[in-house]
Image (cartoon, rainbow, N blue to C red; front, side, top):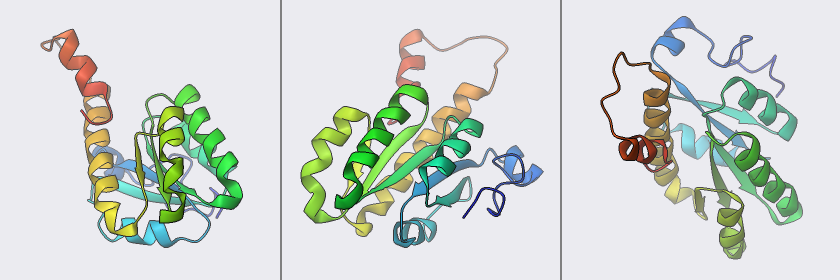
Length: 168
């Protein structure tokens, strides 16, 4: 699906004024089949919008508009090097984004290298999608806090750093 065809994309990442005022943050899923997105979409809270993409070029377009998105990347044996490079690029170019790797059980050995490259989470079963949703929810809350200007700073530097962490 190209960005112009994507229902969530209307020249902006969020399609409606209601989406923007509700602070809906995107969970961008890069995969080849749609299975992971379907599993995630069934459980997604209202404040997170699901965006599916089949190409990395589309993923980078979306991230240009939403630097603080949660990004879930499907790891497959035939494109493991591509996904690893994408996680590294996410970590370097979009440090406010949270990268999650979705893999089959037979690719569990990749967890360490993916985390070293910058992934904040790694799952090997669609039964564990609740973990991804919880991470996306916390990441969205933290990103929303960072983007809301306050009149007077009331939190300590330590609290601000902790809040900026993906698990904050």
